[in-house]
Image 1 (cartoon, rainbow, N blue to C red):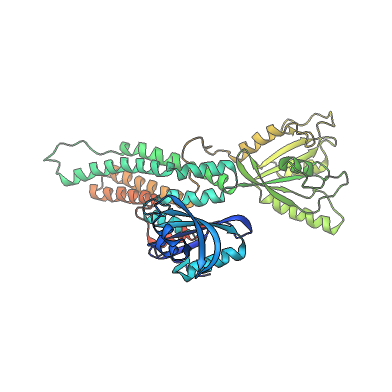
Image 2: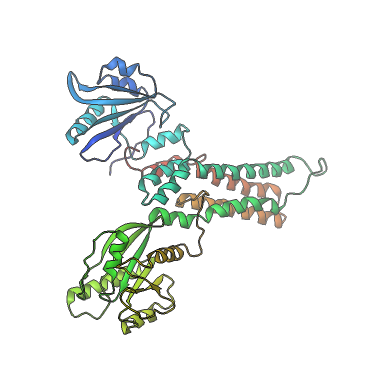
Length: 452
């Protein structure tokens, strides 16, 4: 792996669109005197060099007098750009050989290839965004559902930053009260005592934000849902119903699915990795037996297990055996399938559905969300975190506040209690990036994609 460089004085360039043939591609550049450097390989050069910020210039990229491509150049002058530096975004034709030639020409002209996340890194350094917004940039790109994208967009708009700054303001006021107590002896100034009750509103806000983490991770990373059950119970039909396409082979012949297949879907905004598995039964054929073994492994690692019972068969011995094994497993949702073909009344704990007609499907989706979010905060319009870094720092800040409260209750010197409050403030400052070390920053931005 090549060394990651984050020198903000370098001229950088990178392809911001996928490396694939397309109608258009975008190449981003940034750095001191970026516009002047690109004008040397742009025709007409004076038109680009003299262009005002937030304008687009039409022309050609050239190598000496040879035209490389007909392009549109979007010009941004500091500080009014994404990075806060001079920047040019080149809209070029999406020919792979053409893109390669242009990048090579830029690298010959003093630019180097941007490291992962380097454009956003410079935006952070130039105070165009705090760290929570910077993290949200990558979260938007990697979002697997509309809801995940919406939550990340909310973070990009500054919802986390605003909440953290509000908490910090209250803590700063509290620390100021403590330091006044230290600066003035009790016999000189009559001041009210500092008590643990003053931290309660702060702790409540921090705990509320912290409680969103699990739900945030679910929306960002998704969950694994497995369709399990006997052969010919309708798993493949239900799989196709979830996907809204004929992806899995449906047949009346037992043992058709001999290995699991999977696909990403969205259920109520939750990204779901859905698995259709081999029917569970005693198998004589070694290939089917191997498929069943793999199915059991997938079932063990699932967040939610949808067990389909064939409503026409009723409570079979295989179904009873499964229920005995997974009796107390809260991941399980039992489905009584084929209600369009049977009059057998399902057991009380089963959801009646028809994978063929879709009857009962909406009830199933609601039950899945109930299982996924069991005992967890379900976000509305409030800020939601999904960053482990932010979670750990919030927990660290809460731990420091608990130490401060303990110091007060134990009658320890006020200057020692003040240290704990300062530690809590520093932890919150790390969330937004005010006190974050360079190595932590580089490690975080190195996980971004190149061009962002």
